[in-house]
Length: 412
Image (cartoon, rainbow, N blue to C red; front, side):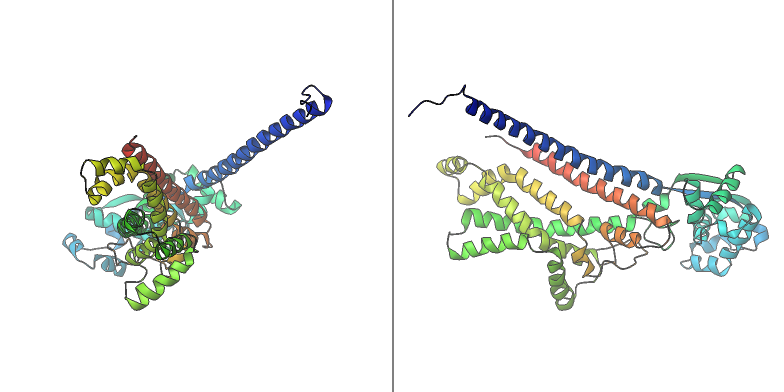
């Protein structure tokens, strides 16, 4: 057999083609990375550009003459449980409309829920009723959007006129950060859905983490190899790939209809997400346990440690970084789920912040979905702002996973 002629034209042509193919592959890969980065940057730019405006809101300065308004409520009555109803009965909404006519020229400039801001201000400081006071009340969403540079020409002209008179100001929208859902974007808040998400994830973690890790320990360290073990492993792998809405159907049938767990609550939502996340935790935990070198087990057994001591004193501490990383990533995925929670009733309008595990609640993805379907343009900014909050929570969970992995990582 003749030796290869590396200097021949045929071989040089093949080498040039091979190098050209490598260069094309490198440029294609670089183009794919740049395209992915472009779409990510576009998404973040769009969300941040629209969402940052959702964290602010425009208020109008309205002057109230409380002694002349007829709102006469004794200071000691503000300790009553029905003080809100007393203020409504006393005509606080009409007082706001009259003051808006006097200060702004029209009551339509203010939000329909602006009277609730005045109510809270009076409850905080009943001394306001003794004289005149100027209070900042939220404007209608059309005026707010116009002052931020969007909206129709009529609203922009009206906002500009009020702005020239020094009656408008834009600041941080605290009700958005501390309130719950509402039909008016001027008082709609994200805290109710955020608290519901946190409670739901905590319950899911409290159920799925110990059960998933213990199942992984048994399958990897104790279960005899055989047909039944193989069937269990295949079933777990298949459950990890089951569409999430199937877990919602299972939760509806078992938790709500059979066990009677409180519907539309963080408790049933957490139990549902625990079912969905548990197979992922089992798989991640098994891979982390399997990655521990057998020499660690042999050395521990060689110095007289029992099987339980080997697992819990040596294997699990070494596998903990991988277990925690897989668990938190699984929890982050569960935080963004909506399909299973639709079936357990967590898509309803919830106007209060949940105060317990069985309180009616929503979650961040569901709140975003509900706001995106609203007609009022003021909810467009609120939707983007809620997406920013959800992204911050997800990024925080991923950062926590990286920290725990580096914190507990041990080298052998």
